[in-house]
Amino acid sequence: MASSQPPAFRNQARTGMFRRTPPAIFPPVMGLFGLGLAWRRGAEVAGLPGGIAEAVLGAVTLLYLFMLLAYLAKVARRPGVVAEDLRILPGRAGLAAANLSAMLLAAALVPYAPGLARAVLAVAALSHVVLGLAILRLFLTGPDEARVITPVWHLTYVGYILAPLALVPLGHDGLARAILYLAIPVALAIWAVSLRQLVTRIPPAPLRPLLAIHLAPASLFATVAAMLEMPMLATGSLGLAVVILSGLLLFGRWVTQAGFSALWGAFTFPLAACTSALLANGWAVPGLILLAASTGIILPIAFKVVQAWAKGGLAIKTNAAQA
Image 1 (cartoon, one colour):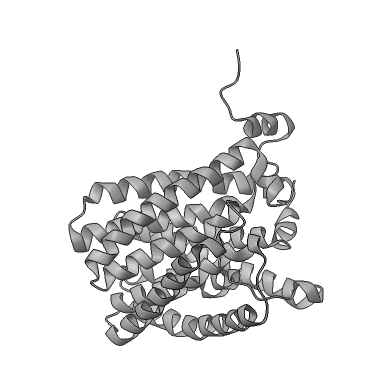
Image 2 (tube, rainbow, N blue to C red):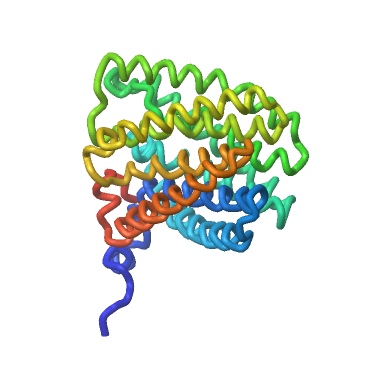
């Protein structure tokens, strides 16, 4: 009788389960968490059915935990795979997204288990600090051609801005405000470097989807500032997010010229973040329109990435390390 498992999982069962789990599975999961939280915000401000948000968040939590165990199984076999994954761009983006997904999980857990949410957030933040130091070391000691600041740096060094999504409802407004103030100048520096790079050279077509990551910090600044009742900062950040989103839409064909790849996961979480920002700042109609569009974009991208993992092609295409 034929096995019902996908080919990749059957092959891994013979050679060692999940020996080449690719970090590229995590960015779409981060986008799915963001989508669930956007639906939750839509339920709060626009009367959408709350059950949709909680169903999405519950399903994504199970998927994330499965993926996390799959990657940790690889690390347990040979810890050196982490350093190898960090040497490639999809690996750095994926491992950063794995930590940030845990921060979003903490935000999802707040209404149900505040104590567990705090614990998850603390572990995620500590893991992200260690990851950031490791990536900085590789940047400083690596070859000259590898010393390039990319939009992925937003995930690594500005990603802490996700923590206030859980900190504010948990009552830690002061810490959330401090994270916001620290994240803004880092994001500004990365935006400035990236703008200079865009002016001086055209990024290769396969890497252009990463430009969508620039939307995420502005959107999150707008959401967090609204949560902290800082209207001027919230409005300014939201305006910047709208400008970036408009640019991505205007040059969408150019950004997606290389066709679908795992890097399309970079479209998912910025779209979800911008949706939440619109809803959090009272832009209900644009927010609901973008929520519908984001749902129709994020779900297929996540499905295709998970499908590529199940079929065994994702690890090869993203050059993931093998234990």
